[in-house]
Length: 148
Image 1: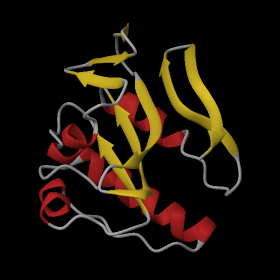
Image 2 (image 1 turned 120 degrees about the vertical axis):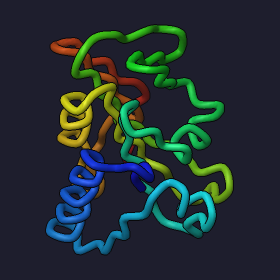
Image 3 (image 1 turned 45 degrees about the horizontal axis):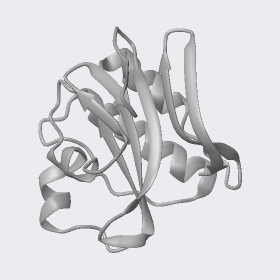
């Protein structure tokens, strides 16, 4: 799911959909935030791809109650702030409307951060990965190791 005015995030979504098909034989639909709000997915996993330059209303709503926030170009995780260029985050959480379904957020505070976040998305099932990861330059913070 991409912002309505997507340019760079659309490219990331196309590459992600291609990789899901190539490695996992999973079909993917690329939809805009307004379409996702009007007709939410009934099950499965929704990937939300977002940067501050391309406002994503769905991501904003889905992050309600999350310990991670993206305010402008600054990530905040449990009160800890991450600022600078090239910061990205990948994390998942249950969807409030369908608890058996998952939303995976792939976010960057700029294009470089989005590209870094996209590279961290695991494509092999059963691979143990952190539930949330933020990376800023050489600093890497991960929380709650679990299966993606």
